[in-house]
Length: 320
Image 1: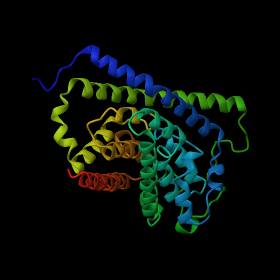
Image 2 (image 1 turned 90 degrees about the vertical axis):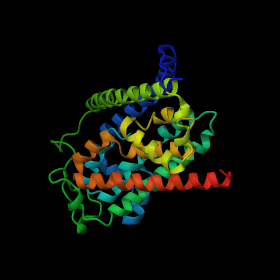
Image 3 (image 1 turned 90 degrees about the horizontal axis):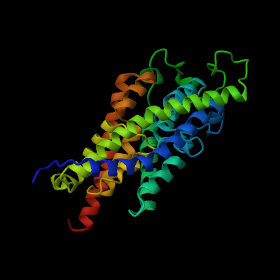
Image 4 (image 1 turned 120 degrees about the vertical axis):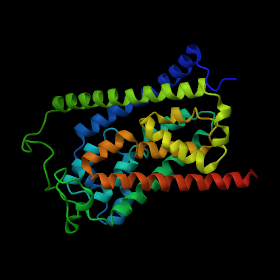
């Protein structure tokens, strides 16, 4: 028996099912992201955060509930916020948490895992994403902003200038001129279209890979891997970093990996929106590459260890 048996009929059925389920969420996420970028001033976000640095980092992990932005468009927003005086630690926390801890992703995760304990999967993903993002932000809080921000990318704040300020760089080239509603609407649509096209391409590639994997690859080959808590967790995160999916739709891909345990799929859905191949280059626009690499390694180990430990605990409880 061959380990790979491809048929177009099975592939198209699986691929189209994933596409029709996931693309509406990609569209909604892109529209909201474009609207926030065009209509919500960055000072609105900075003003609602506590003045205390520790509490601000905790609150930054929840900003996605009010300002849902997928990972594809988060870096320009974070850059504007830091220029407005947002502490870098809060910016990193918001950057990592917003693609996961937001209502669109919560709903898409629930929809993707229908029949597979959707409430449990949704809440585990949100809580784990929040914990990982806040933990990263608290670590960054102890670092000198000048050591992690790229020179010229933003106005680098000093340690004495970590309080919020609205006197930093303006958001537009003509700060005295307020854009009209029509101009903002046009800008929002343009940004939404760009985000949708870029995100949809990655999603369709991911859907094609997942459909091929689920219909053509002999699932008995990966069964030993899926039964190993540590290997299954870290391998799923590696797959997520390669597929470069959008957080608004990656749950539909993860839900198809039914042979992998729940926390391995959670690692896939938490690590992917925080760090993948496309995000490596996007983060490098704002941060120094040394920091970006360290961030990726840290998230990979932190999320992997948490998920694998939970899996080991579950397996031990089942007597496996």
